[in-house]
Length: 306
Image 1: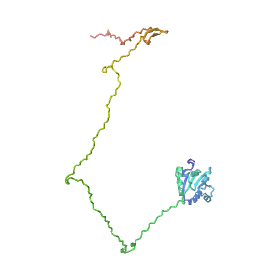
Image 2 (image 1 turned 60 degrees about the horizontal axis):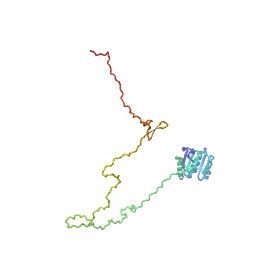
Image 3 (image 1 turned 90 degrees about the vertical axis):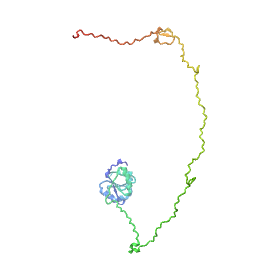
Image 4 (image 1 turned 120 degrees about the vertical axis):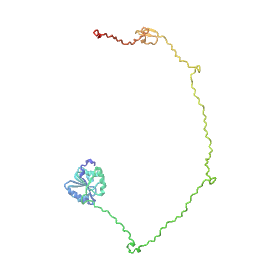
């Protein structure tokens, strides 16, 4: 059953902690207080015992299987006598309630409450009904063992105190040998009072390093096929441009359209249609612009003052 199908408000949803031996009397008290409301009591176990104890016209007692079959059943007050093992089964119960919902919870059923609150997305408020709460368990105190009585505690005379024959503590003796400084083999000297001989580095018979000989051939510059010359020491011959035998371009006349014909290739723009070459045209030289300037004549009226 999805959460959006539940119409009950969170302030009308309560949990009453109650031990199993007091649940039946608490159920009768809740039904008597809400005698005007249409009530449904949902039960998982011991349904026959509840039906024998409660006889009220406004109360319907059903288990989870019968409650699932009654699809159109609705009630104003839902009382869960115990909690089912799955949270989805309780949500199917809660969907039948339109007003209030109460749960009678024993300590053994506390483990089934957390999945229901997780599915609802909120914590269900718990209220203790006076007279149906759990009895406070007193912590059992273990009495300490009495200390063993001593014999001399009841004797008036101190001389009667039991005597213990204790031997004085004797420190054990260890046979330790005196410390002897170890003797090292000192190097022998030529004279006991003389100094030591200078250190002589041992001679090693090493052969001088001989560089390995490689049979290398002398480098020979590769010979390229150079062009042969008349004289090896002379300079190169000047370049001679090949001569082309050009035939003269002759005028052959005009064709039917009056266009000039030539024996070889010839541009029409460089020849006249009669075969004669065009006259050389010399372009005009750029001449600067000549501005005529006339001298200013003095006025007749203006005479120099004497």
